[in-house]
Image (cartoon, rainbow over all chains, first blue to last red; front, top):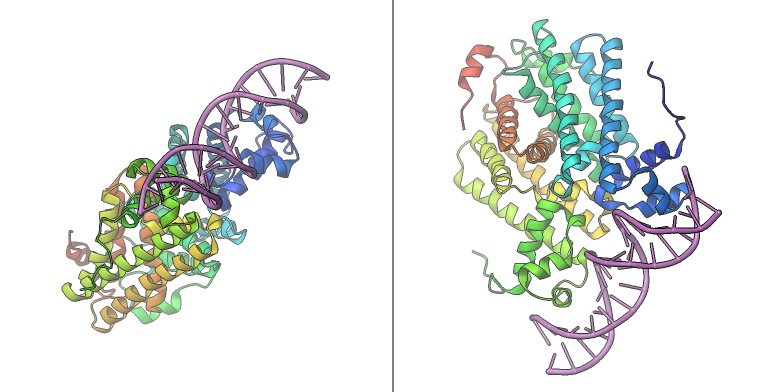
Length: 210
Length: 210
DNA sequence: GTCTATAGGTGGATAGAC
DNA sequence: GTCTATCCACCTATAGAC
């Protein structure tokens, strides 16, 4: 258990909480220090004490998001059963974010990539790399055990999965319909599970409901 | 052949061209009238003559983008061969945009959905609906002819495809690596093509190179 | 750590001349 | 259709007091 250097409700943490939610709903270019200041009932100037520039705030948002995400993945590794269960839990992390009517922090920032400061771009890649590495490891183990079926490199499938889930999330949010995401995620996972030698009728019946 | 009510290089069209490129690289919240004015060497005030508000400009950007996209889909219907060829050409439209280091206009706007004026949100859905309807039609015909294989409703697969391609595009752009998109698109299409009864080794060999 | 005050810039948008 | 001039709201960021 990592100890916290500061109380969880100190100002910097509260700023990050609010800013994270704002990025995930409005984008990095869609909010300002004034929004945070109003919600926290503090002045804009005070915010600059904790985060000198907006780029700095953005970089630390990604850092924290990745830290939390990696922790969630480690929890899955501890608690989940087979590879398919791990993938299903992975997709559920996304679904939970979407349930709060939010977009993945890094998916949102990826869209805004063209306007991001360099420091944020670097952190962003780091986040997606970590995602893909974890997925690739799960995929490889699942294939080795005969539980999952796919051609080519695990990392290529991992890359597809991350992109497909982020994209599905984005569209589901635009439609205001979370089931769109659920359906996409379920289908992606089912395609990995279906043994190619099994006839289609069996395969359809076998597909698990969430 | 639809006749043009105005010359293709009139001011309004030039504004739309520049604005479209700016949205597709920087996002709707990432550019201003000043950017367009500077590039067109015209004043901001003049821009408001053609597009009174930014919301109006945004709405007409989507309208035009959808019109052009639908025209491209009709061209595919005329020129393409089988269903798989149609899907491949569909993916190539995305790839071409990405080749210009741009994001799909509507994919970008979907990310910014939370800050868009209502008129733009409506147009946005309309665009994605048109995409999915076309894909669903191609998918259904392909399945009927035995060329494509998938479970469930064609519209559900279409929805997955649109999201997956948009997401793959977004990540490929963040990584500055268009091959990431190509790999994802190829895999998505291969999964639809692979007859489930064919052993994996044959299937891998069968997968067409672009 | 938080404040007041302010700088210096940019945002979208309008009035009215030409 | 395009211009000059201008409005006012908002932006990020800083200086310096408490």
